[in-house]
Length: 172
Image 1 (tube, rainbow, N blue to C red):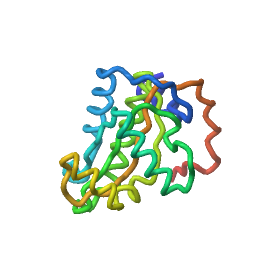
Image 2: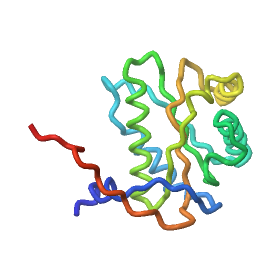
Image 3: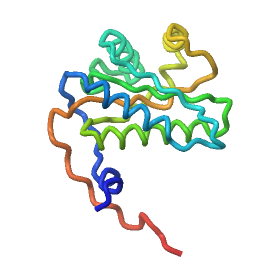
Image 4: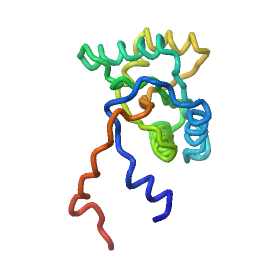
């Protein structure tokens, strides 16, 4: 099978990570793949924040857990995060950011790195704490959080894909 199709068919979300960071070369390659996602009119509305600092990662986890209403790590112990935001002034920002997330997940899988898209980035970066974090990182503008990508090496093998549902595709 074609390598790209194999990646698309076999990538799964990971919900149990080993503690070690991934190699910088792999992280850089994953991020670069995200920057090549299609964007409406080529506007490149998204930005990617790579979080490899444990203290910052844990702070973001705590904010996300608070929004979710739980007292556990919503990032499943992943040691690194990629956060995708997109400029709300671009009409296609939500789609652009979602395509970046897809590229990041597929690139990670192709390099043997596990990932999981974690929600609540929108709510997170609407808080005063989230806005202050962006400002402290020098990120200015009218950005909406699209998603967090939990990254690391899987602590266990992923489950097999569920069968595709009936009626998924209609040929006309």
